[in-house]
Length: 293
Image 1 (cartoon, rainbow, N blue to C red):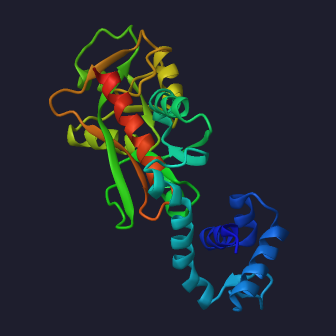
Image 2: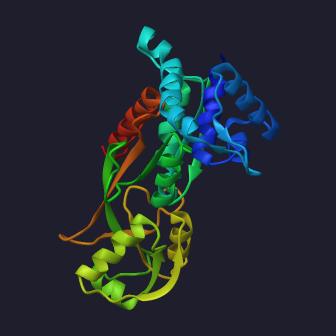
Image 3: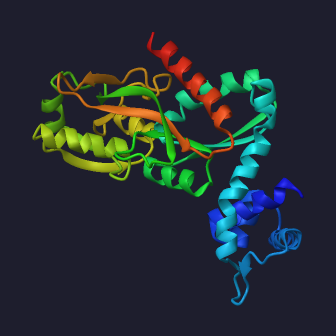
């Protein structure tokens, strides 16, 4: 019995359809149907309700999913158990908040690929809440995100670094008091859907700072570009500011009552690539230590 049959079954469970599973396991819709027919023949049971146009997992099908995941996990970690080192081949699908893609992600991924050249890493950008949903659905193996308010019990959270949020301004601004700057200059806001935007709003509220909103953006690079043209100021993660492109920009501390973002990597406890993600996590930690020192 091929392990691919169980992988396809799991993909159907996670995506909710044969068409969704076909995209996840990189086969045609017809091939998914054929694989599931084959699995049912081998097990001598019906796993799907086919009374409607779209086949759905029946009670037996749902009951088989945890066992299928255990089988796939055991299969993919056999070599790990024998050698103590994960197979650094194949693909790792990694989500990442946009503010990490200019520096943290490429530096850590480069170090990992230099050591394991047969590894292919697919990076998917997005805001923390949406990336967390994709990890939960199985579309992502892991994601680098801001720490959620609540971490689901079936997830593993590994903190990487705490980033201080800082006020980003153009060099033309001579004032050094962050509150005076924020109450006088146009404010470029991170999207409120992003964790950084929510943290910045929290700091503004706590400190009774009323800003003059001028625009709202999701990309840190775009925000920095607007600030560089003196179109406004913004509150951004300090370490993730793209210094190479915007060396002239000022980063002004928010003061003693500054606010921090906890950045880390999250994955499901039943992720079949736990040891691989752990290797990547080690690279993240080494990268941040070098950047800070």
